[in-house]
Amino acid sequence: MNFLMKWLGLGKRSSHVGLRPHREVDVAQPFDVAYDRVMHAMESVLGAHIYRDDRAARTIDAGFGLVNNERVRVSFLIVDAMHTRILIEAMFPVGSAIPERSRAVDALADALEAHA
Image (cartoon, rainbow, N blue to C red; front, side, top):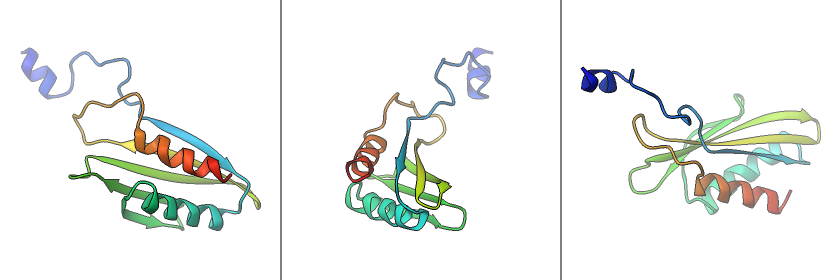
């Protein structure tokens, strides 16, 4: 019975289930400039393959690594005409162990903060 409960995902959950490594970066730039900076940084810093480039939805999804086992999702919040908040989240396949931190999230956030 325990096997069945675990297989269905009904077993005891760890305290960090549902939490993904993430960081927020505020930049003093209009949305379009911030969006272009993130696209450039994802390719140059992470070497990521962009899967979703949806400027209208203010979202970018990218993957990297040998099998794209970790993906990064970036969402944008327009604070005002000259300020944008960037949320960077690590995304992992269902069932994989989720680390407390992501090197990809940290690298991207550090690159964006360096020129904020």
